Length: 219
Image (cartoon, rainbow, N blue to C red; front, top):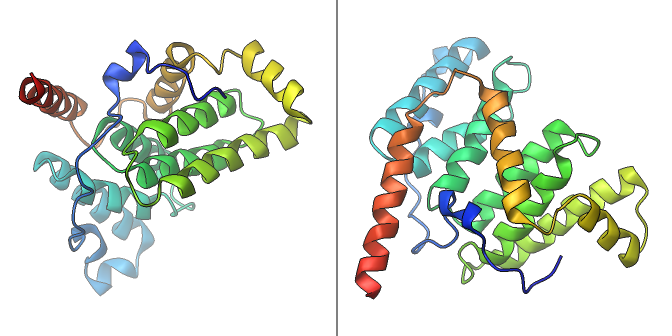
């Protein structure tokens, strides 16, 4: 994918650059009682409630931590919602490049390389790896992981060589963020349905206010 691609208007709804990564804090979702942990369903629901509380307090880093943990609970029917919400918050908040790409990697692993949205997911991960928090210490690891996502898809589709890859990218409009970003965001909407565990409008408004503040400070 070209390194000279311009950041498109579709990225207005996704944070590309953030301030310094937030300092880690103890996760409420990971500190539930031992009794709750004896019942996976109870533990899942308690952590689900923790996501809602963290989100209500605008503590998005902690909400991501809990969702990251819930994303591994594959025996729970709501694990797909946790995976999608984790990616959504990472994309919309000021999460660092490592968290964003890892969440998209988890999403791709869940859906599989054969899924029709696999290409757009890898393309978005590649875009985020290049543009989100460019000074982050794990940026190059994130870029490598995004490339690994493309490799997985190419292996499945038997795409060999740079020319074949470039043709595949062009044919599927994966060089146009205005095309593939809405596809990924719609996929997340479908995975969660009407059962969002937090107020999406709250985070959207916070992001817009933060971006407006940054613009005002630069002017």
